[in-house]
Length: 436
Image (cartoon, rainbow, N blue to C red):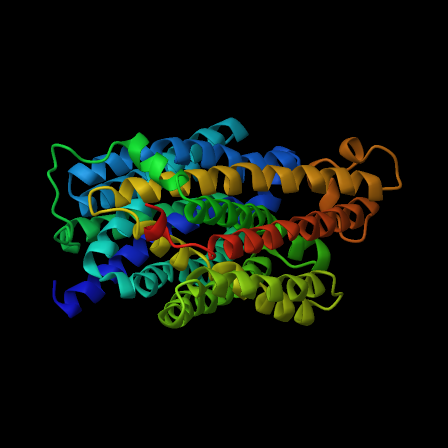
């Protein structure tokens, strides 16, 4: 494949990743409006934004990846993005919490093809020494979506309604899927094996869990994902509650932090790890691990600041390190697999990471937030008195307790980043190839 074609294909794949990311964080952008309309708790928002999506997404990812091993990965990714987009648009017509939950499940099933098949395509398009960098460029779809998508989504919700946010991104996703059907070309598989005897799913799973390097890598990324998804699901709500921002402004604050941090962090993680690994392969994973140890204290200082400007600046700087890990981790994973098993390997890897991160993180943050808010509330039964929109009245005891509880819940989850960084450091002590 020519360099220009590779760049164009990588751009389309990054667009698929961007829409996949928007599906994951859509609830975060409109959480306060959904909470007020349906009178639900932070825990229930966490279930909607996290667990309901993650469980279905994880279960669907492996069979979809096996399909991608046997069929054209470009068509698999585009087709399932189209499915996700249909359910995203339908979510904009829901009138009950249950209907929204069912659409969320449909979004999750379609979203399951937006990462693993593209990972496999990229590993066939680029040589091993450039894969971490290429995957990091693919991951740039996330910061673009976070920065622009979060702002646009929040503004649509503020100016019109949260339902129009879903409708807008549903139509946009369908357009991207259609473009991929027409223009995205399937790369030649770099590894030629006998297709009648590929590695089974269980064989690939045993390979992932059979080396200490990959085990520690999976644990590390899962813990970082637990912190990231838990915090990001409630970050717009944090800015609304703590600084009185509307949905559009809160979406912009969230987009600036997650967008710029993931943009810089992804590039630094991919290219920095590749550069350091040329001198010592252990630094492929040590580089992001060291960054996390530096970033967490800075993030916490911003979280506790009473100044909006200081909070955004410090949380942005601290968050950089949280996004440096995925490129090096996928590169480490793919070093142990061939062209006919990488999509399944990525799917199994993401299944474990997202099941823990998105499946457990958001509802757990919501539960901690509800509990901490109840402890901070001095007016009686917080759950009964501060239900739904009552907790969003500016200056009220309910609003102050709700803001404080969420702040402490987010702070508590920063501990998982430290655990993830330590696991990556332990993973860096060995070589995947030496343990096969």
